Structures are given as C-alpha cells and as structure tokens.
Amino acid sequence: MIKLIGILVVALGFAFRFNTLLVVMVSGIVTGLVAGMSFNDIIELFGKFFIDNRYMSLPIILTLPVIGVLERYGLKERAEMLIQKAKNATTGRVLLTYLFIREVFAAIGLNIGGHAQTVRPLVAPMAEGAAVGQFGEISTKTKNDIKAYSAAAENTGFFFGEDIFIATGGILLMKGFFDSIGMNVEIWNMALWGIPTAITALLVSWFRFYRLDKRIAKEAGAAFSKSNAEDQVNVKEAQ
Image (cartoon, rainbow, N blue to C red; front, side, top):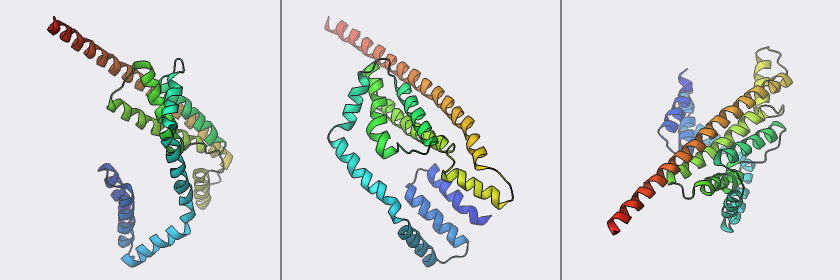
C-alpha cells in the first residue's frame, strides 16, 4: 500500500495549490523511489515517455498561437458584443447551452471544444457579456466566478458526454478491467448507463447556473443601491 503514496502527494499538492506539473513529477519520483527504482531509472522513464508521446503536444503547440492571433484581433470582444445584443440572454443560459452542446457532441464522438480553443476566447467572454448586458459593469469577483463556471461547463459536458460514446478511452478502460476479472459486461450496456448520468449532470449544472444568475443579480442590485445612496449623499453635501 505504501506504493500508493504518490496519490497522497498529488492530493496534498493540489490542496495547497502548488504547481500542477511539479506536483505530478514529484509524485512520480516518490512512487518510483518507494517501489525500489533508482533516481536515474525514474528520470530515464520520464524521458522515454516524453519522446514516445511527443506528438500528443502538437495540438496544444499549434492551438495556442492561432487563438492568440484571434484574440489579438478582437475575438473575445466580438463574442462579448454579440451576446450583449441577444435578448433574454443570461450568464446561466449561455453556459447551460454550451454544456448541452458539448455533451451532445461528445456523446457522438466529436470534440468541438476545449479550454484553450473555446472556453477562453468564446464561452467565458459571452457569459460575461450576458451579465454586462443585463446589469452593466460587474465586479472582478463576479468576472472570476463566471470564468470558473465556464471552465466547469467545459469539464462537465465533455466528461459526462464522452462516457456515452462507445469508443472513448474511459469506456474501453472499464471494458478491459471487467474482462481481466472475468466479468462479461458489454460496451453498449456501459454506454447506455452513461445516459442517465449525463442527464443528471445537465440538471445539476442547470441548478448551479440558475443560482449563479441569481447571485449576479443580487450583487448587481446591491451595487446599484450603494451607488444611489452615495449619489444622494453627494447631492445633500452639494446643497
């Protein structure tokens, strides 16, 4: 059981918000040392797996400059302006719509999103623009909350949606595990039971986004009342 200490290292590292890459590397090194490997062998494995999987980093390397150029020429601003013109658009509705679309496309095996490709340049600015269109300027804390909920919409939609697709890594991993212990579980059955989970995730997210809209409205109302009170004080002082 001591060989599982790497999991504890990861949990503590994330809890104290240390650098993610550093935490994972330390966890791997600690696990290897506890398992009886030498430090040189551990570093050699790091290098081997990096070389074997180096092509996996190409999408990230190619995506970042493209998104950077688009943002340089106003992609985020245009997305925010577009959603502000939409009637009845709220932050929660924007995020719920994206989550639903992300879940549906993930369920049929199409990856149309991602944090760098979609959330940062499009979803988060549109969700923030919906709030600004309703209430005017919003606080920095509210903006950060909207960004966090936007990232959550991406994670939730993709995670629970892909479990419905029979060729996803999670389904195949479970299939391989069940086969290894002699349990005959069909892939279609696992994918089928992913549907109620995905629907539940959608409903829970709808409730969370609904509460987010209420909280934004409450904070905007409080800020408006405070502003009016300050204006009245200024008027009295001027008189």
